[in-house]
Image (cartoon, rainbow, N blue to C red):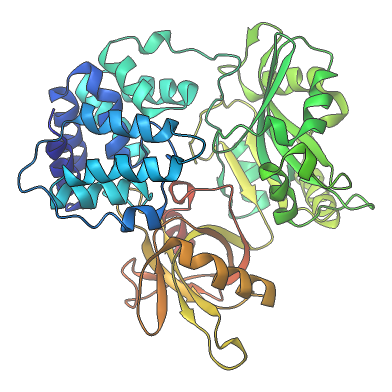
Length: 501
């Protein structure tokens, strides 16, 4: 298959707001592709190369200024092969060799192909083929039911492999596998504690901690740990590895949170916890030990539990981890739920989670089975731009332009601005870091590729014609940045619009 065909479909998908049209275009291309090409085609259209990060940043790509090829000649296989080679280059001279390989690729690419490659390799490709849309396209192309495709994706964690399994009619062979991380189940915001408890009864109410999501696998005498984005961090968290080694089970898959605590047991700032995930054992601050709190168990000693209701998984969890289970109450009365919420807030945590005890584990789903209830509304939004400050903020990037995720796969939809909550430390960090994500700038602002996620607290939203989403944030303020989340995990415009109801 010609690479130009992928680029053309990407452009077509990006030019329409219709989810049905996006799915039709993507499914048509998947049907036309040879089976060996499918993994690369899916990865390209989803905006994430099979190879992951290839070690070539924005500056390297911007330096590839040679003239484009007059006619398309590249194939999907050829582009994928070059990226394979670029990703494996290491050692002395690796930077020059990557530039040489990419230079040859760009020289063979047309202008449209060059633009696509740059967007793909910098994470800026936002043509609308996000996970949900691509999964629908895979189901359409293969003729397999959507729920079966989504389940295989949950268990495999990868879109390309899911597409191959669907087209080969082997989705049923994709099973929970020790040592392969599962995509995590997500929660949606709950309006009130009483409402969430009433909706989900019988339910489990537990602490909502300001920590980092972890998934831990123990099997064959080994323990491995992943983040919510399925990045392995085993080498950075030896105390968690040692703790799980000591649990009274031979094999287990655990879902939970981890956080650093102060001497009096209160949570340290989220950024301090996250700083551990990028460090080596030698770089770690030994006083900054991580404490795990587990809230789900997907496998225990040879028994897969992922399709069991939460009440069964919770029983297994308590057998497996004992005192390391997150604090909570099973099937509480309204008064008990209120008491637990007060205790969570007094301990310095965010609020509580309310979970349906009859629910199964469904990765990536922000449905009503899990609801998070906090004292204030908080949403994860994408930073679109930052304006240069005035007065005492002159010379720093200050006022943020904020966007919500388009559930149909388009670019983030702007919903407001804020400079509130920005400390001097955050202002300095923004000014230093945002140019690394820059797409362009003018005299007033630096505009960012959609790559930075920030958690925003707000009092609500209001109808507004000022922004394209038809709403505007009320009294928005910055709480923290979320390096553990990608723009695909930001909250949707629909989630914000629900606050109008």
